[in-house]
Image (cartoon, rainbow, N blue to C red; front, side, top):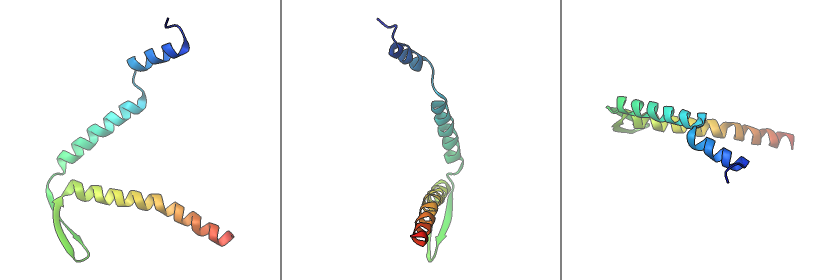
Length: 86
């Protein structure tokens, strides 16, 4: 009843976790430590506005903005190069 290839694969995956699972666990632990070490409030100035926010939120916003810029920049550059060629 359980000698086929699919039965063996299911048995192996239930007993052994992949490297992606362990990488996700490590990242989650490091993120939790980072968050709890950066809960103090800081003053953030953006143009003419000023507000106080926990440092971790300020860092998260900057990280997300950097990720969006990093994701958009190659696409915009690729579109611009396509316009010049066509």
